[in-house]
Amino acid sequence: MKFVDEATIAVEAGKGGNGCLSFRREKYIPKGGPDGGDGGDGGSVILVVGESINTLIDYQFTRYHRAESGEQGRGRECTGAKGEDLYLQVPVGTTVFDVDTEEVLGDLTEIDQELVVSQGGFHGLGNTRYKSSTNRSPRQTSKGSEGESRNLRLELKVLADVGLLGMPNAGKSTLIRSISAAKPKVANYPFTTLVPNLGVVRVQEHKSFVVADIPGLIEGAAEGAGLGIRFLKHLVRTRLLLHVVDMAPYDDVTPEHAVRAIAAEIEKFSPTLASRERWLVLNKLDLLPEAQQKEVCAQLVEVLDWKGPVYNISAIKSEGLKPLCHDIMTWIDARNEAEAEDEELAEAELALKVQMQHEARENVEAFKLARIARKRAGVEQEGDDFDDFDDEDGAEFIYAE
Image 1: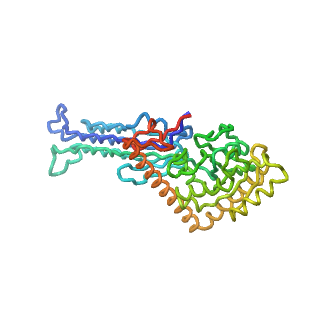
Image 2: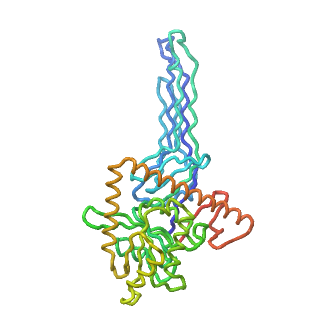
Image 3: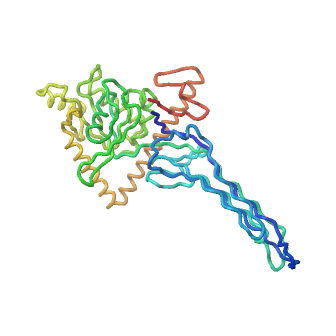
């Protein structure tokens, strides 16, 4: 399986058809006059959100896309056929950038949403259009205009209400399996999760939310260590972060160090993302003696001086999950109601999302440039995989399982 969350493509709209220069030539009509028709409009290139597509893998192999040009006009005032529009399907959550200007052309977040990324050329005019009382035999026509050409970068960010973050092997995949129908791979070793997973959590009838499980983070993730730089950007679309902590780690990394390390990486990647609502979820309590569970959790909260909500759970045994899911749903409903009633709050939330995406994009671009420089200098550091990297195309991040 491949998960591709970024692709660079070139699109070109169709050219407009030229106008026709023609005069009527019929028996018994010696001066028939002009009858040249207009050309057809060129087809546009349109991105449309497809329900059945969830990666950008197809655009890694086919990078040039061109819409059909319009036909030329014909005699007898016949208009040329319009070029067919070219529809390209993309997944929900795709952001479209113009590579040359770095302009954000659109953010596609709903099924069947469309975005015209390359406008077709306008049709040329036939000589019939130039007929007048003083110019009865015009020999003037116009050519169809060229269609727009663009170089686009497509970035996919998963859409979710809640994002899970934490060290590798913290139990994030087990948690999402326990509270939803998602079935990510679970195993007793780090980096089991190599691609983001989405799960829908149904709290009660007509009450549900979407949770995203991204690959585990390690120290240095914001600089490219591990898999972090590839998937940290998916968190910018979430509204609530659940920081999952392994309370019985298999190595020397203490829960306190794990929490502080991940918080530091989020801060480096996007200060705005670090300021979002974050809840502490203390997992794998079933591996601790029952008499020590509350004491160990309380000590961690005290050492961290944690002010936000804390939940003690065992994902594998489904203990403590109902209160967690219920509180998440309550929090989401309250935020939705507040934003619906307060226009300023809704605008502030939108501004935060834009700021987070800007910070994430800057961080990713800086990493790409540094990685290109290391490749050209022949210097490799942890996290680099030059076999899967093309600096001429601008750093394609493809991770295959």
